[in-house]
Amino acid sequence: MTLETTRFDAAEFIDTPEAQAALLADAVETGDAGYIAAALGTVARARGMTNVAREAGVTREALYKALSADGDPRLTTLLGVVKALGLKLSLAPAE
Image (tube, rainbow, N blue to C red; front, top):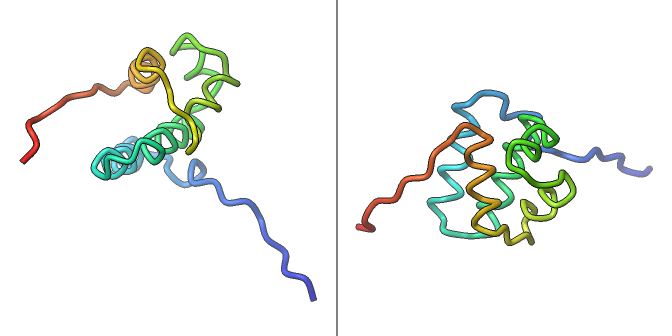
C-alpha cells in the first residue's frame, strides 16, 4: 500500500493580516535570512504573488526566486515587497 501525500503550502492557511504579521514577526525574531525570505514569500503567495511582484517592481519569477528559502533578495526588492504588502520596517536597539 502506497502512502499518498499532498503538498503543504502555509500560504493557504495564513489568510488574515494578523496571521501574516505573526509569521513575519517570528521569522524576523530568529534572524535567519532564509526563514525571513521564505516567510515573506509565503505572505506574498497568500496575497497574490503576481500583484505583489507588480507593486514591488519585479517580475513574478524573480520574486519567487528571491523569496525562497535559498533566496537572498536585494535590499530594493525587500523594501518593495514590504511596501507592496502594506507593511513597514522598523528597527530597535537589541537588548
